[in-house]
Length: 333
Image: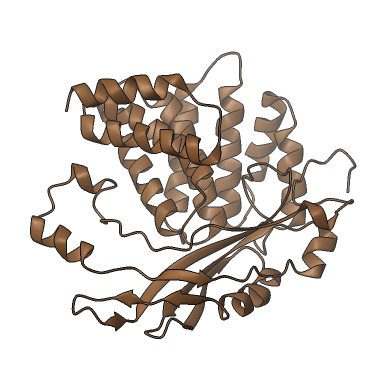
């Protein structure tokens, strides 16, 4: 493998102190499937009260899964998405692997989760009830940054090498290579990756071709919509694609409405799958901007406020414009 090949998940020098296993959530958040913010929807008072009266389970003991030795030695990173039931006695049962990037992470993750303990959920009758949760565990190495994708059976080292080599080429050379690759048979997720890369390279050309860039982004989304959102690589590429669209789909109300809907859908999925707050941060800002431009003041206020809270929680550098536009949105409520 070329020394200058920038594949974040492959590292020659790995130390145990660089190891991070991130638990993305330990509590279930009730989200209305049709709206991101309950305060901004027209849900009946009875329905809201019904949801409030069901107390979600609370974790009392959590054991981190061991980073698999083979994955550590190879510098592999990945995610595992699990579904499981918290029983009435607070123990775990019915653990199911919903998605994963590499099977090497599954065994240790399942073994760890089976040892977790919860205060059980409390139902409307005031008695403990079984409660289903969905949980994502991310295995990563310190300093790797945000990944466009993780190595998997479909996006293997051969694909990664070709993809990142094209990513490093000049826009014209990369587009020419990608055009040739797209003429060949490949897996849908691989095709979506190359279409997204071609869109980003098109945006770097001196003579902009917005129509071509939009066409590639739309085709990327069309492919991803046919794939499983639980696959971390599918949702990751959707995040990048929609974020890119939010930068260029802003000339008409129709375009802004489309981006707003896509951003809301992405955020709902990220929350449902317990993605880390720092990954949700920019999507809240983009959704807040789109909502502001559509005069959806409640959604805009809530989005900017959510981003501000993430800044404080994660001790990020504060963006003063968030407070400014949150307060402007509030005055229009």
